[in-house]
Length: 130
Length: 81
Image (cartoon, rainbow over all chains, first blue to last red; front, side):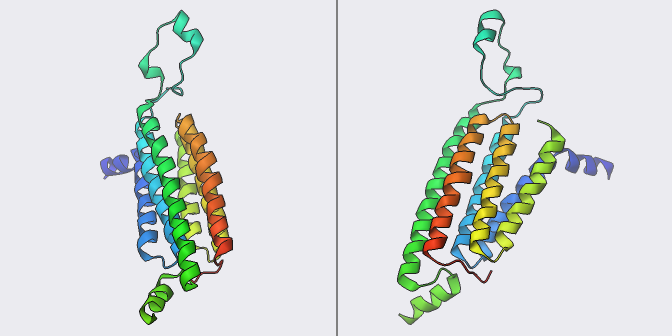
């Protein structure tokens, strides 16, 4: 039992990423309003990006910027800097996420102009009528 | 990475995520999701990913909140869920 508790507590950040991801997935599936669905999508994306960024963390490491002074006077140890590879990959993912959000909001606006609603059940009823 | 700070921000993140989905006014939901993005940016800065943090602050908290508010003002603010 104490082993299990230690396993859960020592990885608390991973558990919270899973919780955030499931909140986003729940919102995308079961919310009826399209803006709420897009907020859920944003939460889902940022939780995955957070997971990848947290992989690059090292204990007692600083930000991955090499000081000019250090290069000249001492050797550079890779253990002293956080891993920058996941950061660079996730930088692209953030920009792609905002582009997706913009397209989604544009589609919502078009739907509102054509059908006068942004709620899914009302929209489906309106589509059935016409 | 300071774990007390980490845990505090992660709990606040879960709270703001739930609030932004529960609140019935869409403008408030957009503002709370902006708060969520800003907390996420703080967490990334704390993890040593400064480039990701300032991109998220500019693009996630700034631009996407503005997009969302623009859409809400041009469509409707009320919702049933």
